[in-house]
Each structure stands twice: as structure tokens, then as C-alpha cells.
Image 1 (cartoon, rainbow, N blue to C red):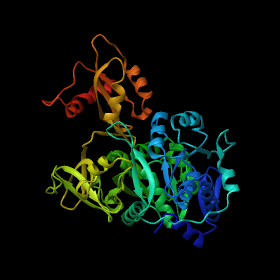
Image 2: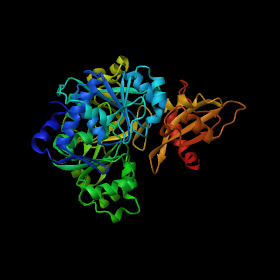
Image 3: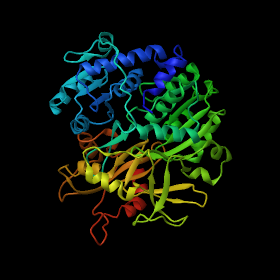
Image 4: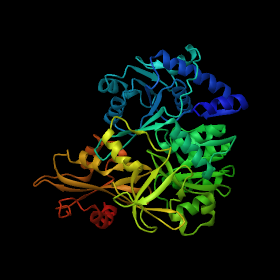
Length: 513
């Protein structure tokens, strides 16, 4: 199979069905297919060849939909850029990936001069927002209108389809190479047990399209055929309004988003009966929020997915388990049909049921590797298994219970923050002698980035100064939400910071901060 096959199928079977809705703009399958073929031709006229990376830095829109499909139509690789990154982080991903063509919308055109300076190889910028294109950029709509439809290259399953950058403990993002077969395997395998998307259904896309979860939900509806409703960014009232107006049947949200939707003061005023499936994941969810959500969407089945960028969905807790309730709601579910999952010890051998170890998985959905990082790839895929870095246990029926993160990943609002990256930024402050970054519980975001800092003798700094400094080097959501000052960090005999001890002692002080 190939990733544009679903568009050919939809054109054959439902050409006049609305395929994308973005604000007041509605386009049918027939219109989208023509625009995708012409955009692919436009990309080729700009010098995009098979295997080249096409980056997009933009808020969600129907043009994301067209760009993904047109890039694959042209045989190239889509590189959706994290919109929450700092300019330096964005530039690093563009340089590292070798992306020479970048699509930006109005929200990010101000960054173009800086990105051009930081990325000498960036030869072409296409403005994919509404309104006139700024100088030195190509106009997205003009590119489509002036280009002849290109032939679909129908890239096969072994081809590289997407390059999604994720954080790394080294302080630099890693490009996760996702193949065509991997994306399709994950989508079909997850759909077998999720049943989130429905044939002819309407999926709401409000999570950012640089995130694997948003891509997975978008792709599932594409494969089955139906309509996709795009919101530029998540906003609770906008979600409720879109569900009611467009009779949305499925959507995916991280728990913090779901909580904001169901706790909205006007939630009871909206007709939400059309929703049949709600998917959630990326961070833990409280039982109270889940119960509240199930009441708000009484006709919907709920599905939890556990996975990572390197593998997409690994386990799923389906609608039947949600309906049954009980202790299994605290699990991450069981392996999807396309994944083999084990809980292993340090030697990679499977542990007895009930014992805690690292989650390992293998299957066709696993990444092809990390872009230009052979050593990191070999480490992550050693022994033929993807090592997730998550600690968990498995019960006798195969349900996986994630209990910790081996790599000190902090999950805040559904986004992964790597403590090592934050620590590197904090260490550059002139008043900081040493520091450690951990996650502490947060009622809104699931976890909050918390910094424990030892100041240099005679130096002074406030929590606000520390946060401001961090935001000059890393994205705002990675900067510490709370800061604690201490005389010394607890160390092991080997000189390593005892983060578990910090977690035990810092939650109360973080709340006070």
C-alpha cells in the first residue's frame, strides 16, 4: 500500500463528499485531489525530488492535510515542525534534516528572516497562510493554481514517509524516521481495536499536527474515508462549537485538553450526542476527569492509547474496558494486534508477570531509526526490540501498567520534556552552581516542570529570573513552572543526583512556589 491510496479510493467512491473543513472553507474530495496533485507538481517545480524533506511550520489547517498528501504524492518526506519550539530549536531541526523547502503560515512568517540566517540551505519558503505572501516567499495558492497536476509516485512501504523530531537527553532533538509501512501498519492495527474513526465519519483535528497522536487520528479517518475538521489550535469552547456545528463523530485529546473541555462552564449548553469515539493518551488521566468526560459524552466509547513517536500506538485500552470500569482503568491496556510487547529486565529478557521492568516492543510500526544518529538508533533498537525507556508491569491477562519513566521524561500537557535538556539551559545562568529538573504532580497539566537549584556562593536569583533565562534557550513549555532553591542536591555514592529523593521531597515545596 501507499499513503495516498486512500485519496484515490475516496475520489473513486465519494468524490463530492466534504473532505476538509477549516473555518468557513469546505472542500470536497474531488477538489482536494486536484489541489494535492497540483501542489505536488508545484513542489517538484521548486526542486523537490524523491526523498527530499518538506517542512511545514504552521497552525493546524486544511493546508496541513494537502501538504502531507502532496509531499507523499511527490515521493518526498514530510517534516512537521514543532510550533512550540524556540527559533533556535526550529533551526536545528531544519539544518539537521536538510529541509530546503519550508511552508509557513501567518503565525510564523516573522521568523523567516531569522530562520534563513540560521539555515543557509533553506532555499525556498512557501507562505501557506491566508492573505498575501510576504516578500521573498512563494504564495501557496498561486503555486497550486500555476502548477500542472503531477503523477502520483505511489511510494512503496519501504520508503521514508515522515521525519518527526522528538526531544533527547543530549539536549538536541532527534529526527524519528517513520516509514510508509510503519504509518499504515500502526493506523490499521490500532483501528482494529480502537474503532475510533468511522467510515464516512467526521474527525476533529485540534491537537497539533507535528505530534504523532494527531497524525495517527488524521490518517485513520483518511484511510476509512470521511470528513476532517481542522481547528488552528486547541481551545475548549472552539472544540465544543465544532462538535455541535459539524456533528463530529470522533476526536483525540490529551487528558489536559479533555479536562478543559468537560470543565468548561458552558459544556452543558452544547449538543455533543454525535460523538461516538473519544481517544486520549500521551499522559495519565485521573479517574475523576475520565468519569466526568464519560458523562459529558454519553454516546461515546472511550479509548486510551499508549505509545511514542518511535512506534506510534503500542497498547490500547478499549471501549469495552472503559465501559466495564474497575482497576483496569489504571492500565495502559494491552498490545495492539501489530505489536509484540514484553516487560524486560536490564538484560532484555522477559520478566515474570507482575514484576516491573522496561517496556520493549517490536513490529512493523517501529521507526526506521533516528535521522543521522546511528549510535542512538542501535541503542534504542538493540536486540531487535524498541526500548521505550518506560518502566511498567504486566498482569496475567497482558494488561500493561506504566509506573515510571526510566529516562526522566516529564509529561506536561501531553508534551514530553526531557530533564537533561532543561538542566543544560539552566546551567548557563551565571548564578547557578548546579541543578536538577524533575516532574511534580500538577492538577491541570498532569505534571509540572520543577527545578531544584543550588546557587553559586554569594550569587542571587529569583524564580522568575530563572524561568525567563530558560525561555531564551528552550521552548516556554519546557521552562520550569516552579523553582526551588536548596543548599545541596542529594547525591548517590557515585555522585549522581538522587532524583527519586527529590521527587519525594519537592512536591510540597513546588506547590508552595
